Amino acid sequence: MATAALLRGAAPGRGGPAWRWRLRAAPRCRLAHSSCSPGGDPTAGAAWTCFRLDGRTLLRVRGPDAAPFLLGLLTNELPLPSPAAAGAPPAARAGYAHFLNVQGRTLYDVILYGLQEHSEEVSGFLLECDSSVQGALQKHLALYRIRRKVTVEPHPELRVWAVLPSSPEACGAASLQERAGAATILIRDPRTARMGWRLLTQDEGPALVPGGRLGDLWDYHQHRYLQGVPEGVRDLPPGVALPLESNLAFMNGVSFTKGCYIGQELTARTHHMGVIRKRLFPVRFLDPLPTSGITPGATVLTASGQTVGKFRAGQGNVGLALLWSEKIKGPLHIRASEGAQVALAASVPDWWPTVSK
Image (spheres, rainbow, N blue to C red):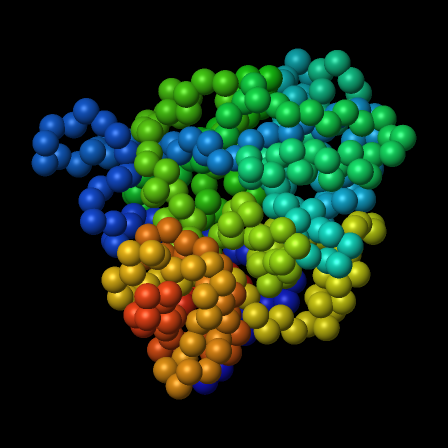
């Protein structure tokens, strides 16, 4: 039978099975730091685990022309803030999008936060991006700014945190309230419900989240890879990755009805053709890894030696690989640099839309 056919342009489901983010593969518990007694559960009593993402940073884009300026560069509509009630603080909204080059390949993935500026009757935006390309993104924006009334500047006042439920039970029993202010923004991750919440704050994240504990960053990336969510330039190499092969539509990151933007032609044509033969899939290594690890770009092969795709990036025994969708069910392996053959298995995340198997 053919592999699951993935719905063209469908939005990712936000229902489905309960969270499954506890890491069975982790040899020791990394979920949170606490002062529990030896042998006890270090996450006991913690409803949420907060991860400080030092690899993510913020750019601030504001000014009368900020909205039309960004609309001409991003794959998605802007998360314009909702009108606030009289006397209420301004509401924030978040969205996900990619900046593309003129050939239609991804340059930078960003989470956008729209916030009504107190001092202006216009919307300002915070762009969360990979910290290693903050300068490059700032130059990219400056290239297209021309005479627009827009200011683009780093925003180091706020740090980026991810907030995930510490267990499926905690996810169902506890809830968070969205917050938006000059010092704190707490909002649902716009990519998928599996990625929990995003927190931007000047303070320590666990102190602001009821039942929050500090988590190990290793766990965040393991969870992200298991869910098939790429993030940053390791997973989405600039000028290499194609947005629809990177599951941008599944992660609410593209609008096929918005106006023109840089790189739109290839993305729109691929969507309307309705055929996306390769995708980024989560993969798990079944054999011990060589000491040198798996090289990004390593070829993934079937048992007969047929090429299925290429390994993109990962951490520990999980990662992402760009694979032909119709060939992921059989035994797969990679020939490592040390000559060893490493078996791996690809999976289809349960939050992706499917129609048949």
